[in-house]
Length: 487
Ligand SMILES: *Cc1c(COP(=O)(O)O)cnc(C)c1O
Image 1 (tube, rainbow, N blue to C red):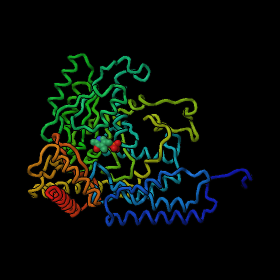
Image 2: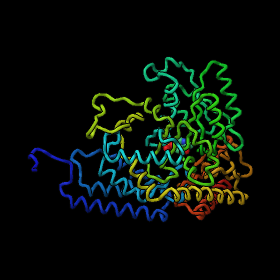
Image 3: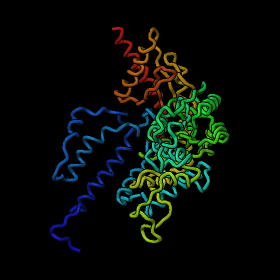
Image 4: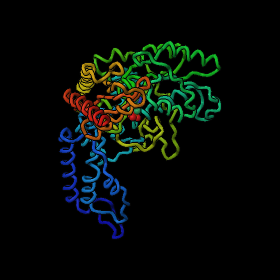
């Protein structure tokens, strides 16, 4: 059918030229990934590049070749670094090669996964069903793929809050500042933020003390609940952590499940990276109780190595998740047949209507890699953390700052004659030096108030030799700094 002379479309005018550029881009992407080990972990974005990037958008557009060559020059050389085997900062996954294909195909389909009846919806349902099986949730549980655990925590705690009463209609007027949530002092800040966003205020979160292993002190939790009840407040939710961001600590989940059962509280687990330890023989026993959670938040983009962003929320009583979010105006009314049919649209289970086909990259990664190999990588990373613990313990110029629970090692360079802030500054500078030299990318945190060099291993490309390079790099940069000071 010919186009009217006045009608335009945004499709390529020359599909063959588009194909040539697209194939070149795919080849570049593959080489980029294949050669990652040979490049610096991280390269700061030069000012000149930043300036060129901040230019205005062109009214007339430009050729795809021009846009692509700008991408190659100004964007591709400056990644976060997390695809590199010596990226150890924060908790980042490294991604898998097939994500390149999955993301490309999802773009071609451009599915809107808010609802309706089409293939992508069934892929997401399948992925959620896999998750229920992995974590031994009942088939009647519900779930939703989300951007990450921050969003998953928000949804889980929202369902917890809404299950206490008619918040949707009456707002929080019936609960004037009386609801209280409990989590450990080591919990991720997204937990506090979720409670804030839900209108309860961060003062409604009790940060329960941790024991020597950085896991929640259940005795202190019981006392806090009792004290709040005596003060006329209404405890509603306990948020357990399965793999804390500072040290990889795992709260005593089974005991938390018991407390929640006895006290009638919602049990939410933040298992951002640690929950997938459930796939392994060695970590699963320590996660016992996770399968009793009322809601579980975790990420695919961390230890499951799926490309960003990919997180998940599971809710044991699926009807409660639906009750918290479902809203069907006339233009979304369910049809009995056609594209507008289908039960349980994803938009009924979270705050978003239009949603990307996030499920496809998870489906590709889990199907090709398989759960066994993901489990093996998780165990391998924990073995590597214990190896680094040995390296640090065997090195008189380094000091271990926390027990190694899973995949996170916190240590520092303790220079004689330096303490307090000066020692913290020295270690922060060593981390920045190592990053800027492109040697490795650890990050920092505070352990008992002291600045720690923090190494997190959630990377399937990491080898033991990479940890040796890291330790050598830290010591070399520390020595350079000490030499400078004495000059
Ligand atoms: C990473 C992390 C989060 C936040 O998850 P995002 O996917 O970054 O939103 C929450 N809790 C813990 C324990 C984490 O490690």
